[in-house]
Image 1 (cartoon, helix red, strand yellow):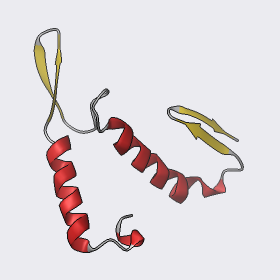
Image 2 (image 1 turned 90 degrees about the horizontal axis):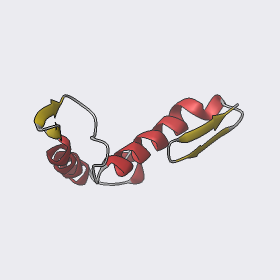
Image 3 (image 1 turned 180 degrees about the vertical axis):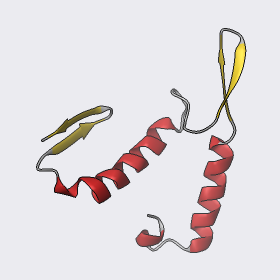
Length: 80
């Protein structure tokens, strides 16, 4: 997606590296027990909205072009 926006490969690689540092490993604590999350972004993480927004943008452009009607607001979707 970034390479399509005429961003250099070095910048894309650096961005992916920095994003990986922020997302891996993920830990959460529930009732005093610490869990390691295998994949995904924890709910409430400062990056959760950014990562989900980027994913949904790409998903909508590549997969949902055939839908007659597709409206999304945060986590609500109307599709016909």
